[in-house]
Image (cartoon, rainbow, N blue to C red; front, side, top):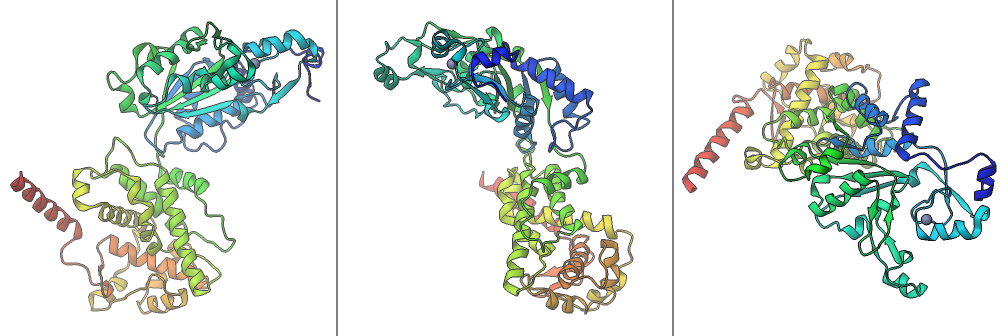
Length: 488
Ligand SMILES: [Zn+2]
């Protein structure tokens, strides 16, 4: 039973709580000794980010996570709450979670003085001790630190300068907890000065009040690395006070990316959904291709939310088709990944070259590149000459994106020897039609991505194209460049 009053707490051996950063350190040490898995749900950071994060907590540092968008920075900060005690006592009704043994607000000091051991308590769960804020240029001192509440003053009949009329900002509300502040460089200089005071003096002074509140908080910031290092964006004394700078990154291998996307994407919506491995690899490959593509802006990065939304959207397109055709089993095809364009185009910023081509064209090229790579992984060494031969001798195949699986399989079976290669994808001849349709279509998409067969708008898959599309793109770009020069 948890103590309900200050007296009960005292009799059970309770006393003044240690600082929040000491508490985090103590729990981390215990987890490390017990060889417990730290920060469950954070994937791909075991050898890079997590050791640094552990060191920062052991050092009792305030810290900043530097990384591009979609690198799980917010998730990392939130996961720090796993280092907080499962329950800590606070004075019941206190807005800033006062420690009953060391209340810092006027109200609680009064309550403890008058009620003594009868002071009622409330136990705080770790999530209640986490405050998060996205920094923007219009965040004010009042938002962050606090302000006079004239209504409260009038209602309570207090003098405006009484501490009891204070409306607490986010920082006091994070007292005894973790304060996550995203995009620190977007915060106005004078607010940064306020933060510096917290880190320097460990307290906060509310404007117009003669009181100082000795706030106990673990500060965790995030920032885009370029913004953070740019001159004049962060006041130097604040930078000096942030003990650890930790760099985050995108998944280092396709496998890691697939695992993260699998964890995050909402695909567990129907028991009859089967997402083939090659579809997951293609979706992930789009993000990898975008991150290295010169047409995509490196500074803003390509968020992990790109493959997550793309997979969700591709699954939805397959679900829609299955519903239309009355099929029970939902299996996404590459055509469904192309149908996920709306989930892709808004997820990256384009450089000049990319803008000339347009987001949709860039996204299509990225999908095609990802298909080509997934194809090479599974079928790179397979001999598909007989399949290619079918198209070279005039064969063509137009697949309707919304066609029933049985119809697609019947069409694809016209291509000699095609189905013999599905074993490389882990698909057997007796598998259900939606599985077969997806796998056989993937083989043709792969051949197309590798420029071994072509595709025309009206007839679908056809003989190889005489001029590779990428050369055409370069020609087109050159033309546009010349045009632009003439205009200027
Ligand atoms: Zn209080």
